[in-house]
Length: 490
Image 1 (tube, rainbow, N blue to C red):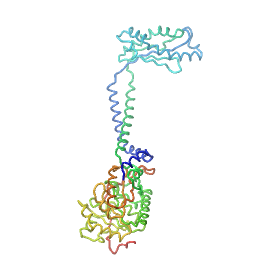
Image 2 (cartoon, rainbow, N blue to C red):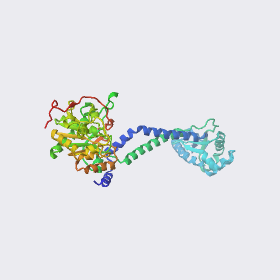
Image 3 (tube, helix red, strand yellow):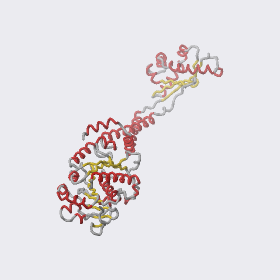
Image 4 (cartoon, helix red, strand yellow):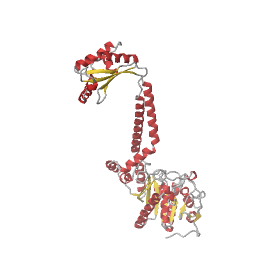
């Protein structure tokens, strides 16, 4: 498998709708991180603005412009005269900041200032579609602001007359000495801007981290980057369980899991049955690259789906390091040694198998983990256990340890007919998945495809219960594999 070639090919395809939805849902999951960073940046912006704020005092003049002689009243102006005055107002505001007038104001205001400083202190605004002009002087000293504004009021008329001889500019609101500083609007603006910048940067960082993580994010990634088929997609499921059931496993026998969840395993079952009929396969191992990808949940539900279709199914827990099948089914297997007990000679296969009437399922489970099961699993006795099981049951489903963590799954794969990979969305790094699949390929057993697990990128995946996590303990009754149990169907 050319991993780099597959990756390059996939990158050329760009983003698809599933990827966009997945990124959006990642952001929703991390909303509290985005909000926290946004609040922190907003707080810093607020504090910085407050600390750097220097109070300023404003003194202003309001003018009205007229294109009539001084003897003509405003009330006698026509609409055309008013329009002409409004146009003149735009021109007047530039006269107030000419070098000549600014220098004159600086020399006559009573303070040692330059013309350039006067320009920095003064702002002029013409009100749109009116003949009104506001001149505002802002400095850190109210006395200075008033002195500059008063000097403008006393000296503006000469340069205005020189620039516009046929017009008038009349003061209708003279300057006053300010007692209070100008409200600091920059605090609110900078705080809001800081919040938006913090939210944007944190969201961008989350997206970049998701991209750099280089995990399997969609079924397209499975096909193009890993190069194996997808035999089923299982979306996230949300269970509103009581506290005592908080760790309850998701099983297709529980209608609370939802129609879509149950139907997904029926579709997987159909594909497995067709393959089994075509290739004469009976034994399927279920594995994953890493822990907590949901391999046990999938192994159990595949077995249950096959059993519900009238087949005799043996589910073997071959994850001897961390057995989880009994926990998933809420069956007490504390005294069971499973595969280890058979290979050590303590029990026979028939004595070790339990039959669950509740699930119509035959089970070979372990109640406790062992340190290094590699020697047990690699013996001829293990192969004989599987061969004997194949003669007695229609299907044998084997839950194995993660193949990207330990070599146990590769060993067991050599005894099976087919391998089913469980790939949980956005968990295992792409290269680690690729290496795990290469290891399984070396077993000589066919990987028939993968189950894309815990998907939240699809249209129907709106829930948030993650079933790749640990399972809760449950207690039930196991029935010994004996003459009192129903006979296996051939």
